[in-house]
Picture 1 (cartoon, helix red, strand yellow):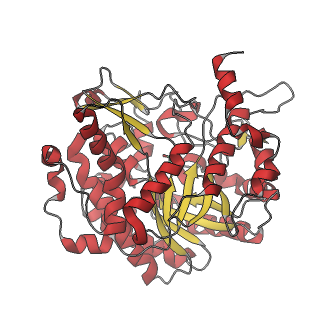
Picture 2: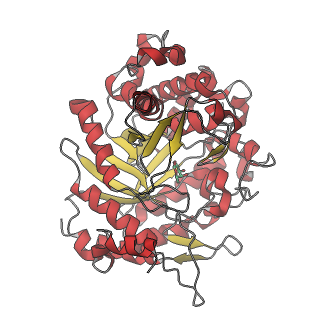
Picture 3: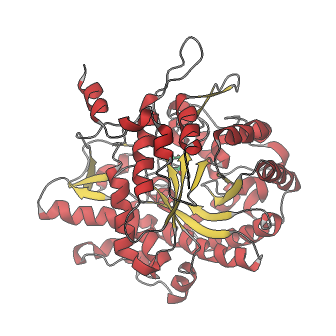
Length: 481
Ligand code: FCB
């Protein structure tokens, strides 16, 4: 037996492979099980019905940006196949569907009134969900900034936060009576780091630490959107979805410890502290020069950013390991970035864990660490937490009979759901959304990374539930509370 197979045999999740209902029995009462997608990754129809380009439309058209040279112009064609997809969700038995409203579809160009064709599409989707007993969770911004706003500086400019608030109000007015929960912004950390600091995501800027205004403006946009949704009298709860990656130093030295703290700040704390505590994190003196952008911030902004939330969304995929010293090559998890070599630290591997198709360590114990860190850092300021994303890509194989036996994904989900159901002291954990319902267009990785419970043949658009889908069905069916 190979080492990988031996390791997989020893994993605690194995006990749930053949006993999904037993895992379902551990689900706490009232826990929401959901699946997640985002507009740009699944909708297709990128120029249909008056939609205008987003920064991702521009980015994916540039040579060399997307690993397999693909684009999202059709993707899974969810725009036309949403009722088939909702049917799949109903069969799966989930309580909720997290999707995003395409900013560039709903408010083309990022200004002015709502696009009627887009309102009609999201109306149909919402009706279909509600008819099937599935509660809608809508993300307002899952990375598709209108390109017209990028021409005036995008998230580097404060005005984009106000444009976003206008769009939030418009969405609140159109759908506020039917959406069960609202996520303002998805992973502002990834937009800043991948999009503005390293240039491996749209808009492809390589500003390193000078990208921090993009963080502040997204957070301000979040706070203003909370105000706008409340002004539109939406009936659903409101939160944000932040990606957290617990960080560990590679070695015992002081330098590794310092840069571990730096990574924790730029990846986790910059986005969580202002929202939950109303202030930016304290920075070690030696690193203070990197954070000039936060020195002059008006306290009034922080009051807006820290408006109380109904829930805190946690996207958890993997921990990070940090060592002092610049990376020796330009590789990052999301593509090549020559500027990465100017950083004073690098991210290291976790050889003790198996990895996903993306090479991310499969470390469910760090989901528990992420929850504990939230409780420790934010205490009473932490609202109920919902895991708004978790899942894994693997190179799935379609068998001759058409079936997909994605045992690796089942194991991943078994371990992460077990950790989620067990929770952590001080955290009111209210739900878990699997990323993703469907295989879809995975940003700079194109169609190379499949995350779905449902396989999508991108030529024919045929949907085939994988083993993980039937397994999840039985987990959900097993719940007793
Ligand atoms: C998250 C994104 C989501 C998807 C998953 C794999 O960072 O929010 O759109 O790309 O990663």
